[in-house]
Image (cartoon, rainbow, N blue to C red; front, side, top):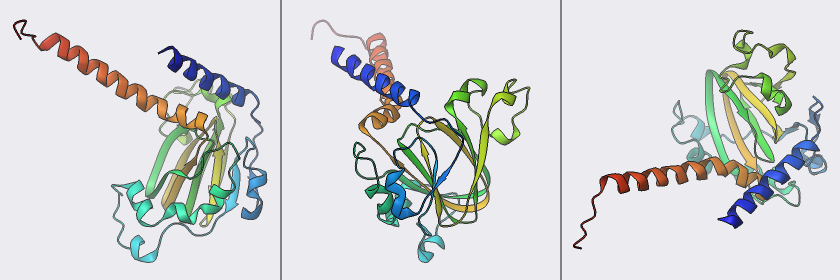
Length: 237
């Protein structure tokens, strides 16, 4: 148990250090795909042209809306293989491969505010366009929990919304936006085909998976308590 606590403490300390040294300028770096390795470790969003991914015509025509298994469909169309340029440009201390590649179809939808814990969260567009609402976590204190639509936030919902600095980025077909950790984003689209993927280091992967691990642990503890309270033990056995 002590070793686990020490490990968690190290993860938190390293992540805090990464946050303190992160660049908090509101700018988006646009580079050719051949030069992306030179900016991958920077703490600013990256815009890059990756080509029209991941949809193949024969699969796009049969994809039903809404998609029930986003990661399964991504595996079927080999999304990760189409994004090998991003994987090969990763920083040396990042883990190889892309995590949780997923595809989706958005129709007149807004996906609520999500905070990035990966080293890079990639969002791409193949058809239509995506409007991304970006904010750095330094302004998280001024936002309510569980923001479902930042475009419609009012002073009644967020009294200090005027202090929040945010930017909007439009992703066109064939382009992708890579967000570093400590950034939050929401997605809005009229009708678009999109994809997402994550890049991780050991630290970011541990932080990303920690909530799920804790939930599983909590569930097991609750099951154990229920068993102790409701299952009678026969002393003669």
